[in-house]
Length: 398
Image (cartoon, rainbow, N blue to C red; front, side, top):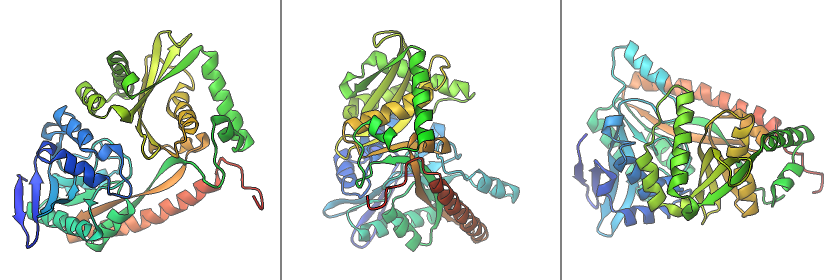
């Protein structure tokens, strides 16, 4: 696909080969009108992915950002990419691609509406109204057909997106993540209060894990926004690359990406650093959390350590962020993709959705059958997880 402009009766559809060609202030203003905005859909974040070489055509992410304009300006937008693979998505369609290959058909390129490498649910179809959201969904379908791609996918959509896409014949796929959400009926204002609300065996396990970290002489410091120095960013990035090396893979994000978002989104970052011996001792691990101070929400992102320390991952990625959120009145902490083990740490199952369109009707029918079966399995799985709720049951009449 190449940059295009399509004139409709009352508005114009534009396709941009770089987020830099979309006006940042207008994009962010549109994002703020959505039900579930988050920092990862901000123009600064998407631009940093592109400008740093992290999500560009050479890495298999060719931007095809779609915008709809009328006489009043930007009315709808979508961060869309032409993909040559399925890495960095967290909604897995490798089996679909393999089925295409076995039938002598090309699955790639495909169109993908998502934040690269970021499995955080939220608005994907940014629109000023339901009517404009529907027009945007229609535009995506039209562009997919005209480009003759095998398929189009929007990942981790919110309820409004899913409804608009389903109305256009897209198929919905169910998933599950693990989030901590402040319960308004029984609010907790400290980590101790959180522990007190948990079942005894879960509480004891967490206390044992935290004690094991302390017994290794590890002490944490927390650094918000401007407190994260260049040296800390360098240390974090070294840890981040070590995590990938341990799994024999290559990091998706460049050091320049973090340099850019540190400068353009300063208030959206929180870093925990583990030190040996004392707060001013040598650093041995770091975790990076994205925060939304306005909406009081936090998102676990990346972590790494210079060496293996038992239970340190849980402390750096769950207990320290949860304690920080509770102390500051945050109401949500999202732990990222997958990870049933997060339940024992106080994060509960939350359903997610993605939307999919396949051009070939035979494959579309087969995928629809698969999604129906998979969806039933996911629903049963979530029910089973909820039966294993780590928190105490509410007292009768409480």
